Amino acid sequence: MANTKYAKYIVKAPIETAERYSYPVLNFKDDKPWSDWRDIKYSMAYRYINKPTVMADEPHEHDFEQFLFFLGGDPTSIEDFGAEIELTLGREREIYIINTASVVRIPPGLYHGPFNFKIINKPILFLNAYLSPEYIRKA
Image 1 (spheres, rainbow, N blue to C red):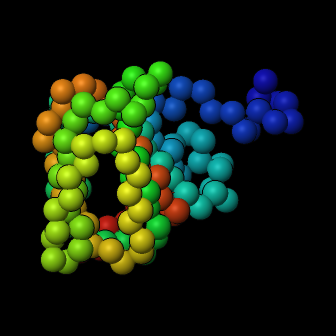
Image 2: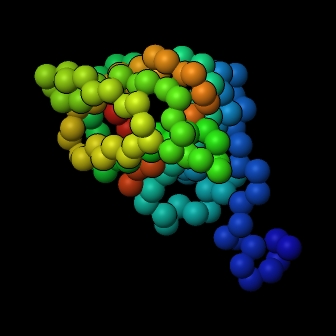
């Protein structure tokens, strides 16, 4: 199949099982085996969250557009959301509560973090998609 015309467009099993994560992660970015996709200017990471955790623990900003997807963990009912996440936005560190399926846009330069997944009554899916080939934080 590697010699076929369109095989380069199919990535099978792109799952990262690094010990630093307490949850399965799908990371789609330049440093993975499919790095010949370098002409694509986006990255994404998919996480299955089944217990409380904190992400982006230090407030930061970056120079690219970012989208955060919070979805219920049952693929037949993604609106069934059994969690509460505290999302901190702006230099003022305003706290927003995510307790329903939501998408959050983080425009370039918007200070954000941490993301505190405080209550997880049911597993949820968290997708971090951003318009950059790599994730670079600016303090």
